[in-house]
Length: 187
Length: 187
Image (cartoon, rainbow over all chains, first blue to last red):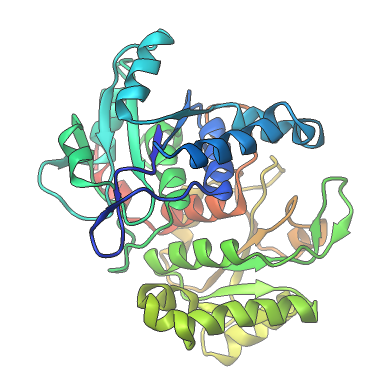
């Protein structure tokens, strides 16, 4: 998956570069490790934000934190920093994963989006997939144009759709990568 | 649900009172609002931690934050602070919800735990349920003794089971309160 910090929207719908936050990296990397996600890309073109992300990762992967909490190392070593979506795609090819199908996520209903069961079945066929999650108020429009698929928003039972990106990532991983449907009624 | 800060375990298995964190409150309240959870109890007997939690809630529910981000108010107004599980139960009775069945959660496999589908079916019958989530290294043993049910741990596909409490809460809400199974294959 890729956690996109640029281009994303602010509360007014303007395109911005969002700040990298320590907790996004920890929570999402831990959930990714739990569900067998191969890499968590942190996408930002801002040099100071890349330095911040690298400092967090180094602390837990090779620094003092790696001895204090080796489980955290196992999670944070999934993180790779890239300038842009193109950088992510190039890295995936270079690492031998190949060019993925790109799946954009959103908290808003959009036309031609697909539900998680449909995507899960596609993913089971074995091709690589890249899930894009936007920080701040979500992915900018151009990211949807780059996507092969758009995933339905997560809907609870309320009309409220303001999950944190950490919660959304966790729920998407559980829906797309969990083994749950095997224990469901009738399965 | 109740986010338990005492009694919980530290990394060595000792019983401690964990610190209240701003982000636990925000992420879990937002997820709770999304899935129609009636209340999020923050359970701590420590006076300074109760003051901290109240300050966070006041800022967003009636202070400056409520004007800046009304959506955050809608989430944080679900939070209620209590000293102990007994306090939570008394509050639920006083508010007319009644005495709930108590469900403890854990990241470790335990005997006599039930899976989320089974619990979801029980919950659909309409009685009130209270889900306990532990901060730090999880609920102390006495909390399991107080529970009517223990929920199976969340398992991904890896052997790694170190989700944040924010991720675990989000996934449990989605599994127990989401409408997803209706769109699953065969339904």
